[in-house]
Every structure is written in structure tokens, then in C-alpha cells.
Amino acid sequence: MSTKILAVDTATENCSVALMIGDDVISRCEYAPREHTTKILPMVDIVLAEGGLKLGQLDALAFGRGPGSFTGVRIGIGIAQGLAFGADLPMLGISTLAAMAQGTYRAHQSEQVLTAIDARMGEIYWGQYQRQTDGDWRVIDSELVIRPEGLVEQFSADNGIWLTAGTGWESYAEPLAQLKVQMEKGTVLYPDSQDMVHLAKFALARDEAVSAEHASPVYLRDTVTWKKLPGRE
Image 1: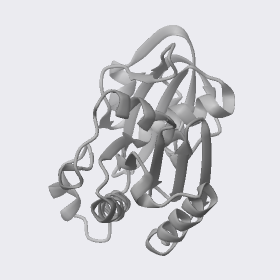
Image 2: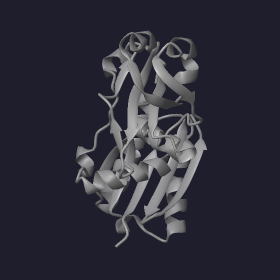
Image 3: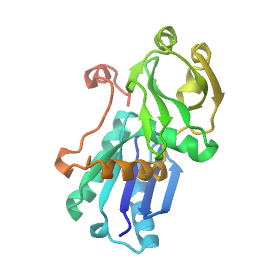
Image 4: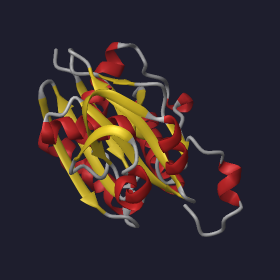
């Protein structure tokens, strides 16, 4: 029986939805920084209609768990939980950084990816990924939030060429160019749900699904820090 997973993501400026039915993926993606709440549910309706499925026929619902904009991550998990509760579906939280690594493979066939999202406040959300033989991705060390200058001081990699992904490379081009690693510029700036469903398939096989009430975001940064800065996401 074909695995059927719906993924939604609003963690960054992108707004995206994807439906996986076996090896086929139906997706919608739009750059919509301030329109996530109005666009995401119509996108869900569109991909389900194209797939000829109802929510209750799915095996799981995946969502972009972060890191990313606090507001965007909260919107995404809230909408995903609402859908999952209504259809009694298990949920799978997918890293936005890992999704960009998969997106870079989809675009460039790169199996080594350095991901950096602009976290504002002079920091980036960082992840280093290698593709495994089964098509899943392994994070090296762990995802973190860090100042680019601090990353330069502690990071190096000598095992070949790494492609870059994410908005952090443009926002902090000068310090990140000092990293001790062979890099090539990739074209992926944001996570996309069509890459999240690929990762969700592996997460489901590893039995990582949780009930809707136990689904949780990953911010990487203490929320108290953000509360001190009115107007920040």
C-alpha cells in the first residue's frame, strides 16, 4: 500500500504544501512572507483534490518544525495540529534545515550541504548535512543558532565540496566566506514541503510520529530573548 503523507510549512518566508502518494508528489509553494494564514489552507485543499484524497485517508501529517521565524513556526504547527486533530492523524516534525539539504540535492544532486537561515540579531540557524545511501540525511553534530563569526572560529571540513543553502549566506556573506571549507553556492533559499515529505517518509518508518497534542516546534533560540525585542518575529 502506498504511503500517503501531507506536509505543510510556514516556518520561513515560503509557504508550501505537498502531498506524497507512494513515489508521486503533488506540491504548491509560494513566497508569501505575510500571507501564510490566508494561503496555506487553500493550498492544502488543492493538493488533496488533485490527489483525490481526504485528510482521513492519510498515514501522517508532517510540518516544518523549525528553526525559522517564531511567528511562522507557530502558524505552521497550529494549522498542522488543527488538521491532525480533525482527522485523527499522527504528526511528524521535519527540520527546515534538513528540508533545504534535500532541496539542494533535488536541484543540484549535492550530497553535502551547509544550511544557514538568517536568524536576525546577528545570528544564523546552522546545520551541516550529508546524504545517506538510502536517501535520508544525517546532521553532523547538531543544529544550532550561532553568530557567523563564532562559527568561523570553530568550524572546518576537509571532506570535499559542500553546497550552501539558505538566506544566511546572503545576509552574512562576508564572515561566512571565511569558513575553512570548500564551498559552492547553491540556489535553495527556503525550505519546501515537497522536500519535507521525502524526509517524513523516513521519519515515519523510524516510528517517529507523535499524536497531535505532543507535536512541538524547534526554535533553537530561547523565546525570552525575542520577547525583549518588540516587533521581531
